[in-house]
Image (cartoon, rainbow, N blue to C red; front, side, top):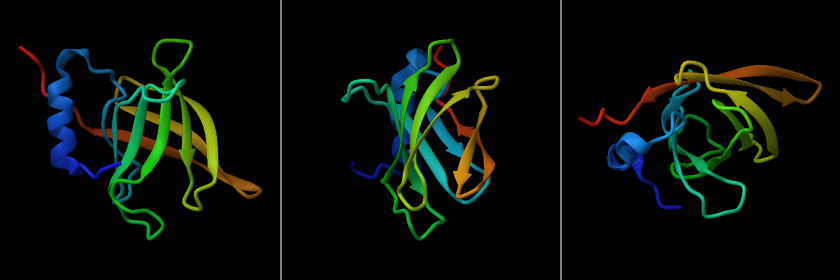
Length: 127
Protein backbone atom coordinates (compact mmCIF):
# COMPACT_ATOMS: atom_id res chain seq x y z
CA UNK A 1 0.00 0.00 0.00
CA UNK A 2 1.25 3.47 -0.82
CA UNK A 3 1.82 5.86 2.04
CA UNK A 4 -0.72 8.69 2.05
CA UNK A 5 0.21 10.72 5.14
CA UNK A 6 -2.23 12.69 7.26
CA UNK A 7 -2.83 15.34 4.58
CA UNK A 8 -3.54 12.65 1.96
CA UNK A 9 -6.00 10.72 4.09
CA UNK A 10 -7.75 13.98 5.05
CA UNK A 11 -8.26 14.67 1.35
CA UNK A 12 -9.48 11.11 0.75
CA UNK A 13 -11.93 11.36 3.64
CA UNK A 14 -13.17 14.74 2.42
CA UNK A 15 -13.93 13.19 -0.97
CA UNK A 16 -16.02 10.48 0.71
CA UNK A 17 -18.38 13.22 1.94
CA UNK A 18 -21.65 12.39 3.67
CA UNK A 19 -21.57 8.70 2.81
CA UNK A 20 -18.61 8.06 5.09
CA UNK A 21 -18.85 5.55 7.90
CA UNK A 22 -18.10 6.69 11.48
CA UNK A 23 -15.08 4.36 11.63
CA UNK A 24 -13.39 6.24 8.78
CA UNK A 25 -10.94 8.87 9.94
CA UNK A 26 -7.66 9.38 11.76
CA UNK A 27 -7.31 7.61 15.10
CA UNK A 28 -4.86 7.81 18.03
CA UNK A 29 -4.21 5.30 20.78
CA UNK A 30 -2.77 8.03 23.05
CA UNK A 31 0.80 7.52 21.84
CA UNK A 32 2.52 9.25 18.94
CA UNK A 33 1.04 6.62 16.58
CA UNK A 34 -1.72 7.70 14.21
CA UNK A 35 -3.85 5.23 12.25
CA UNK A 36 -5.87 6.17 9.17
CA UNK A 37 -9.01 4.17 8.44
CA UNK A 38 -10.47 4.22 4.93
CA UNK A 39 -13.04 2.14 3.07
CA UNK A 40 -11.50 -0.83 1.26
CA UNK A 41 -13.57 -3.81 0.15
CA UNK A 42 -10.96 -5.41 -2.10
CA UNK A 43 -10.98 -8.62 0.01
CA UNK A 44 -14.06 -10.61 1.02
CA UNK A 45 -15.14 -9.92 4.60
CA UNK A 46 -13.33 -6.60 4.80
CA UNK A 47 -14.98 -3.18 4.64
CA UNK A 48 -12.10 -0.93 5.77
CA UNK A 49 -8.36 -0.94 6.37
CA UNK A 50 -6.39 0.84 9.04
CA UNK A 51 -2.83 1.82 8.24
CA UNK A 52 -0.02 3.63 10.00
CA UNK A 53 0.21 7.37 9.36
CA UNK A 54 2.54 8.39 12.17
CA UNK A 55 4.79 5.85 13.85
CA UNK A 56 6.41 5.79 17.29
CA UNK A 57 7.36 2.10 17.42
CA UNK A 58 10.47 0.89 15.58
CA UNK A 59 8.48 -2.22 14.50
CA UNK A 60 6.24 -0.16 12.20
CA UNK A 61 6.73 2.07 9.19
CA UNK A 62 4.40 4.67 7.72
CA UNK A 63 1.93 3.08 5.34
CA UNK A 64 2.02 -0.40 6.92
CA UNK A 65 -1.42 -1.98 7.27
CA UNK A 66 -2.38 -2.30 10.93
CA UNK A 67 -5.99 -3.54 10.71
CA UNK A 68 -8.67 -5.13 8.56
CA UNK A 69 -12.10 -3.95 9.70
CA UNK A 70 -15.58 -5.27 8.88
CA UNK A 71 -19.04 -4.13 9.89
CA UNK A 72 -20.39 -6.11 12.82
CA UNK A 73 -23.82 -7.68 13.11
CA UNK A 74 -25.20 -4.77 15.15
CA UNK A 75 -25.02 -1.09 14.20
CA UNK A 76 -21.91 0.58 15.59
CA UNK A 77 -20.00 -2.68 15.99
CA UNK A 78 -16.97 -3.76 13.99
CA UNK A 79 -14.87 -6.88 13.71
CA UNK A 80 -11.18 -6.00 13.76
CA UNK A 81 -8.28 -8.19 12.68
CA UNK A 82 -5.13 -6.36 13.79
CA UNK A 83 -1.40 -6.83 13.83
CA UNK A 84 0.45 -6.53 17.14
CA UNK A 85 3.95 -5.03 17.35
CA UNK A 86 5.42 -8.50 16.74
CA UNK A 87 3.07 -8.81 13.70
CA UNK A 88 1.08 -11.59 15.33
CA UNK A 89 -2.57 -11.40 14.23
CA UNK A 90 -5.38 -10.95 16.75
CA UNK A 91 -9.11 -10.52 16.24
CA UNK A 92 -11.71 -8.74 18.33
CA UNK A 93 -15.08 -7.02 18.13
CA UNK A 94 -15.45 -3.40 19.20
CA UNK A 95 -18.31 -0.98 19.76
CA UNK A 96 -17.84 2.53 18.45
CA UNK A 97 -18.80 4.89 21.29
CA UNK A 98 -20.50 8.11 20.15
CA UNK A 99 -18.62 7.75 16.83
CA UNK A 100 -15.47 8.91 18.67
CA UNK A 101 -13.79 6.05 20.61
CA UNK A 102 -13.42 2.29 20.74
CA UNK A 103 -11.53 0.01 23.12
CA UNK A 104 -10.30 -3.53 22.79
CA UNK A 105 -8.33 -5.92 24.95
CA UNK A 106 -4.81 -6.79 23.80
CA UNK A 107 -3.52 -10.14 25.01
CA UNK A 108 0.19 -9.99 25.89
CA UNK A 109 1.40 -13.41 27.05
CA UNK A 110 -0.43 -14.31 30.25
CA UNK A 111 -1.35 -10.66 30.80
CA UNK A 112 -3.15 -8.08 28.72
CA UNK A 113 -4.31 -4.51 28.61
CA UNK A 114 -7.05 -2.31 27.19
CA UNK A 115 -6.20 -0.19 24.16
CA UNK A 116 -8.49 2.77 23.50
CA UNK A 117 -8.51 4.64 20.20
CA UNK A 118 -9.88 8.17 19.87
CA UNK A 119 -10.86 9.77 16.59
CA UNK A 120 -8.76 12.88 16.00
CA UNK A 121 -9.62 13.57 12.36
CA UNK A 122 -12.91 13.50 10.50
CA UNK A 123 -14.19 14.49 7.11
CA UNK A 124 -15.50 18.04 6.94
CA UNK A 125 -19.30 18.36 6.97
CA UNK A 126 -21.02 18.45 3.59
CA UNK A 127 -23.43 21.33 2.97
